[in-house]
Length: 155
Length: 155
Image (tube, rainbow over all chains, first blue to last red; front, side, top):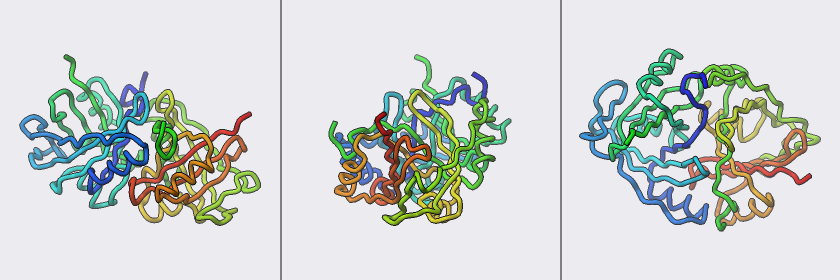
């Protein structure tokens, strides 16, 4: 299909929260399911996080994931206090829904297309286990939210 | 399954925006698809909207829907300036993601279960075409978002 991302299938809704352990407990009780584990975003040696185009070795977060559909995740993100898209959202808006995410093919090309559309990349990096990468596009002006791109590396 | 809702499948992400016509144009361009129509929330005679437990005949909005998955919608909601969960969110947080939604069976029972969990119903009403009903649960304290329940009436 055409379009900026090559897809319009949303696969994740991401929340920024102050205390991921506490909020995942509540969601697990609400859903009546087992609590998922907390996951650390990983070491900078692997993630190579860039925030607003600059190396951000301290940027980090703790996450937890719930399956909320055959192809949908609910992600909780607790920023670590260092500058990042997550911390910026928490400081500006408080806790709440930070992004929706799409699985893309060809991260660099898709980011370029989004920039051509007028939407800049706010942060990008690799998964903590080096299995893929993500990018946050700042769509707040036109699309009214942050759009996350996700891509798994081929094995 | 157990749990408060009887489901954990998210079927909609809902945005509150100032200008639904403008924002749907941007999303349509971004996705490379045709613009969906604007839909009015409908007349109070049918919707019977209640906000914080009281009749809210003036509460209304204009909506637009994008399909963003086999079982997922992206909803844009432009509140009409009268008191509602939509207007309250816009006044407090500005534009952004207002809720995630779940399809439930037995609205009254599910609302009761949510209240037992400590989550109150903020607003409820019928669809403008009388084909079903919705309720917004105020999960902001514990779940960090508003949770919408949707139920189609049996034919």
